[in-house]
Image (cartoon, rainbow, N blue to C red; front, side, top):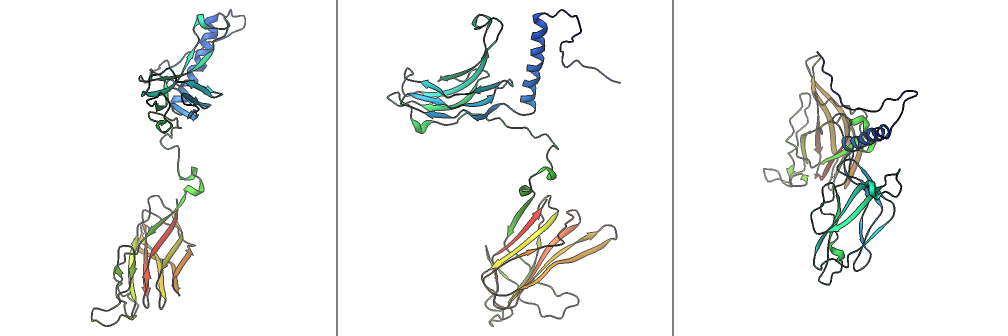
Length: 327
């Protein structure tokens, strides 16, 4: 089943046809309406550029050149500054500056066979007329002069291009928008001994609001010479597909900091757990600020995770972890 609807009409021409005025008017109407629909449906109405308000005298206001599209999709362009003299308007009045467009009526035309379109710039304390664009507002002081501090853009609507659903994806974005940094404080849990390790576990980190650092004393009251350790899961940002770089920085590092960045998860094809070290490094010296490039940083957000494991062998503090992802 199909149903056919009429959506438009345009003149049809053939050789030898007698053309009348209405045929040419219909041709113009077809193209004008198509352009107006395009402006409204594919873009938007409002100020496009320019048309700023500027105080050019005690009672003079200048509208700078610019262009706009009104609520019916009609384009309005002002090619030179327009100066408005407000000397005859009542003092202490709040005014609104508007812009509209109109076509000359039959009795107003300079030439019988031409229709001129005109931009109409108005200043009034009344609400904007139907279809008019608001360029801004201003206040006259007690002497009827323009208060420069009162010029504002209240009620101004600016045109913009519409983004249709699905019209912009990651591949369409600029490179600078397809990658970004995520910075975190270290909030690790205490380390657990790995199955094949006999290494003595360090105490956990003391977690502050902005910094993680080793305890100065152990629970027994003895001085802590064993540093601190911890592990933390990293939340992968929505839409991220690759880890590009990793940065870690801190103030204290008395005896070296072991850093391991691990990709984990589940392999649905084999039904097995995944674990691969993307980075294992020891950082020496303090203060430290190390940046590492991650060669195999591809992430499947549906099945893979990121974790970090830190082990400071002496007095240690961690101020920052930062991860650069691409999308």
